[in-house]
Image (cartoon, rainbow, N blue to C red; front, side, top):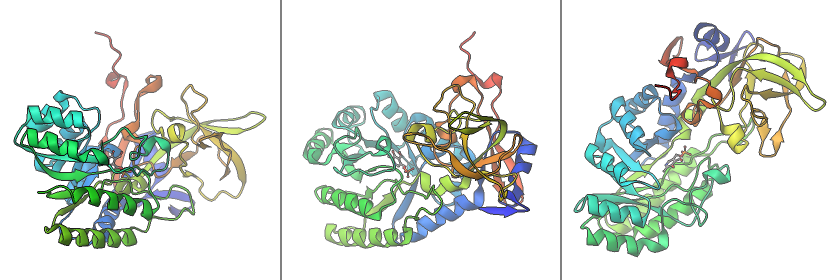
Length: 413
Ligand SMILES: Cc1ncc(COP(=O)(O)O)c(C=O)c1O
């Protein structure tokens, strides 16, 4: 966190000046952080045939996707909409992979027509894919029986997960592929999101490599995303360098046993963008109950759902008065008509957080909101979504306009 004259800086600009100029609330992204995180990740895996597929569900703003393109990323798309966004951002179809779940034939036809490789999530999907597009290349997503993540909702491996073809069904998948003359050129897994223990990732990697060893003709192995970032002050950072070295060593050893230098794919979504994004909002109300002092702001879980959905912690800073002497215990409440709409909460409920003094009119900064922030936002309570601003040093520009009533779909003719 960078401050100047007791005010929060984003790039080289004071956060409250951004609100003055572009209104409140706004999502602001720092381009330098996105590029640095991406490069750091790339450098952490010194494997020649590495490809980083940005899981754009984390943030589909086309300008952010363009930054990824410039940095040499590929795209993990989970819907026809994401395929479309990626192509619009300038990616070529061969730079994309389509990985989804409960997939319709129409979804697959869309991907096939655009020339995007399909990664099948079930035997049913593989069978239908084979009928639609026989004698082609395909990838399969494996559930390696291992899961991990920051919350039960985002664990995507193991017996409770709806994702992938269970590893013990590989022979069924191979039989389907043979029937339709499909070449299984890739195996994939994604065990969950927000992983900060490297061992989980490595354990799942070993499982997938065992499966991969049984498939001839592979061109790539995709170990998914899930790399976590620290959200709480003092939380330890995932040692990306150590993880990268271990991945490289294990993969290199596997390839020499397999007899071919395969491509190694990973699919981070959160890692390159989470810490680059801040949701700026303005306090309009201070009120008290016998249990809590609340600061009410002009945004809510319609704009950032992670605290309400997962009990996720986001650090909140008084951007107008970062180091105020006076401390208090306070809860930051949104403007959505539901009691759960409180940003300072955990899985059990509201948490009064110790913060510097907050007054009506102050600008608050909800940090680490660049991933699964805007992309999970909604128009709940029929409120428009905020604008998105990209900051590069001293420059700022609008990369998505604030919605107005005209953008809202009222269902009226
Ligand atoms: C298939 C797949 N790959 C990659 C990701 C990215 O995960 P993360 O943002 O935790 O890196 C996800 C997230 O849900 C996913 O479903």
